[in-house]
Image 1: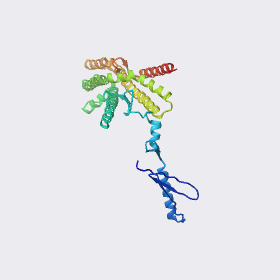
Image 2: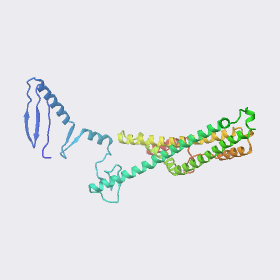
Image 3: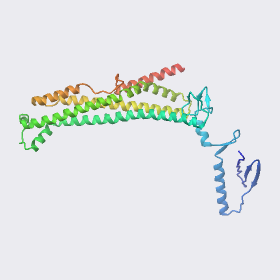
Image 4: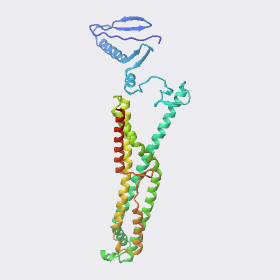
Amino acid sequence: MAGWLCFDTEFGNDSDVTIGFNNRRRKTKPSTNGSFADCGRGLARSIALWTIRIYSRDVTNKKQKPIAARTIDEYLGGGSNETNIDGVYQLTPIPMWYPFSIQSEPMHWIAVSSQAIAMFSTATSIGGTAAILVIFSQSISLQFKIIIYRIRKAEKHAYQLYRMNGGKKLKNVQLYSDPSFLGFYNSNLNKLAEHHSILIKQFYHLYEIGKWPVGLAYLLSSLMIAISLLALMSGDGKSSVLLRAALMVVAEVLYLALVCGQSESVQELGESLHEELYNMNWLDLDTPAKKTIMIMIEQSKRPLVLTAAGLQPLNWEAFTRVMNTAYTYVNLLLAANA
């Protein structure tokens, strides 16, 4: 640097400011006439001096570095100022080995951009899969609730349609002997059966979309949680390590809990539909209505369960198993380190 400013304040009866430029210094004393304007100038000067003091001077490199930057480097930095360590480039967000030499600014930004694209792609695939699972699972759950409600109200709905179309008032025992009422009842059942078939197809589309991404997340989640917990316990108090480990644990646990919870909700509603079909008053119905109900019962026998890679059903039991496995991994890693 061509020159530098060194501000020094001495608190007492007098205050002076030492200004140096290329080792040439001059001292100036402020006027102390006690006026309001002088007091204001003195206050402004003191604020300016203490503002400048937040910068520290690097004697070796002749550079000024803010205290905020030093604090971030100390508590959140990577702990190394080297560019390359054993061929691993250190100036990217994640230190990594590259098959080419990084000696210029454009190459540095190419390396940083490649990591940013990879991180964005990973986050998008994981977050996108979770969003698809949540949206489709909630939609399927809502449709199941609608079908269950309409099955419970099937007789009432058919009777309302029967009365709206000029049917006479009948007692409950006479309803199932009236062909007109049975026609409305069968029409409602056919619509419910069609709705149920479409819902099953939607579920299997969801199953195929999420099977492998969720399976990969399920297989790696226990190991990731264990490593993150170990980092929390042995992070040497470094804020960056603790923060990343805590965020990783929270993200993995919430992701797995969300997927397992939605999957079990769909499974329970499918079982509830199966029970509602059995509870219908199907003995008094005619043959076409009984056939429709039997088709729906057969379709609902197969449980609608999302699985991880087609192997492990996703439910709260699977979530508990992952947590237990992560705890076991932590104990093994601690024992190995000891």
